[in-house]
Length: 324
Image 1 (cartoon, one colour):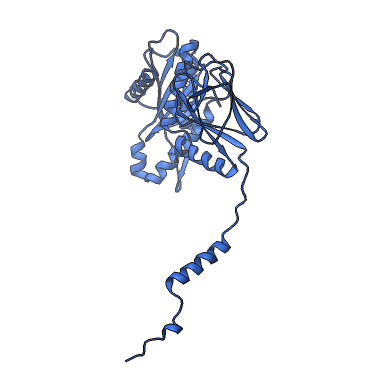
Image 2: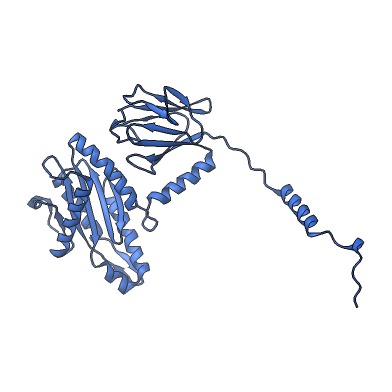
């Protein structure tokens, strides 16, 4: 029979070994330097663009409905220049700018209030903002989370959810100012055949190239989003139907001239485009009606032979298309 080991010669118990290991790990834990919380990020919890964020450092940010503001809030109860967010002495403050309906922090009306991390700022009828005080690392993490929320991961352009939030705000602006607003549906022709013939990787390459082609064919202020599958939507402010059709033709030609390398081949695709435009004489009462009109127009373009443009409701004037 093997002799049992003497208790006095036994190795340390597992509790003792664990305690020693934990102490050793604590000795080696990296000493992260505390970074100053020198940025304030506003996240819109409710309002015209839920999930939208805006980050400021030293300086100030004016909140309101005025058209020239960099972060305009389209809420009927928000004044043109409603409140000011500013930094002083390493701290952040919110100040009411003599607004009609007041500025509230955590449910209390304020004139000037220092902000703490997590404070909630209420403006107007339905706008609730959360203030987050962040250092550089936290800010970068928040930026990446926002990008993931609003961007389509395959094409690198905006996603449908973000487009719908922006369109809600843009339609309210257009209706109030009696200014034109255009929605275009861009639907790639025979895209299922591309996937079936060349594979989904080739299809993904086509979607990426077309997305970037559309993005470069329009103005900086225009919004381009992937609506789903092989459909894209473009939202353009301030151009009438004639101008919208000229832009749509530029987009159509740009896509037609794209060449996507697949093995030894250069794959070519075309698109059908439906255009609807909100103007003084149009019957659209909401952004949903404007989108539905563009959707009907793109299906008409498909039925009429593809690789073409159709305008909603009225026939396009003869002058919009140039000779090929």
